[in-house]
Structure formats: C-alpha cells, structure tokens
Length: 144
Image (cartoon, rainbow, N blue to C red; front, side, top):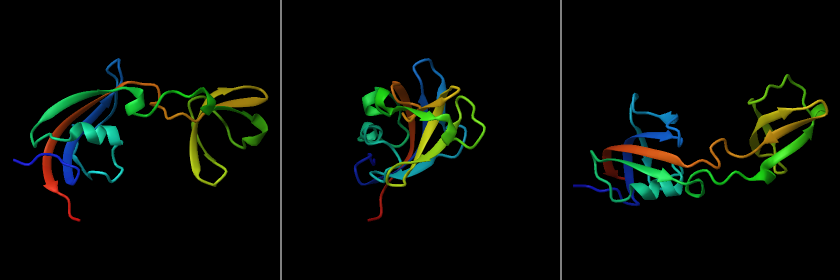
C-alpha cells in the first residue's frame, strides 16, 4: 500500500472552510486535483499534514493562521491618496498594485474616503483558522 511521502504525486479532493463552516474552496463536486509534493501548489504545512496518508483515506485538519495564510498584519493596511486611483472603486474590490520591484500585489479596497482609500494587502484568509478536509484519491511516485 503506498503512502504519501515527500516524493509523491498526490491526487485528492480537498475543501477549505472557515471556523463558521463557510466553504472557501472545494473540489469535492469536481474532478480531483493533482500535485507533486513540494511543487508549491499547497502551503508547506498543508502538505506536511498529508504525510503518511494512504489512498482512500479521508481526514480533516484545523490549520491555525500561522500554518495557513498568516496572522492579519496591521502594517499591511495602507492609506493611499484617492487621486492615485483612475477607476471607479467599490469596497471589497480587489485591485492590483505594483510593489517597488514591479511585482504584482493584490489589495482589497477596505474603505473609500473623500481624500484617501484604505487598502488591505493581507491575504483575504489571513488571521483565520481553516479546516482543511481531504480525501486521498491516488498516490504515485513522482517522476524525477
């Protein structure tokens, strides 16, 4: 019987949900997803939780913020002059910004004032404990 190791290709159904049970992402009603361990598809702590599981096994893991998308960081909330926006804005809208290195950085419009706009650059799931539910469909040795 094969078990998930750090060299596995894993095919699985997964679901992420918040503490209140709200489902954030799920593929249980779709085709299963596949990833190669360590390819960056899953957060490292999510991958680690799968080690030792076998095909057909189902499990749920509570992932605190520090093992998921991090704590909500107040310094990731920025106030930007309204004059720098050349579009219609709505609260909750995701806007793409460029950082100093010209990398794309998404921010959520948190508040729109007359003179400034509050933008939250935290990951939308930061600060949340998530339940990571999985059903392992298949395990293969990844091609090297």
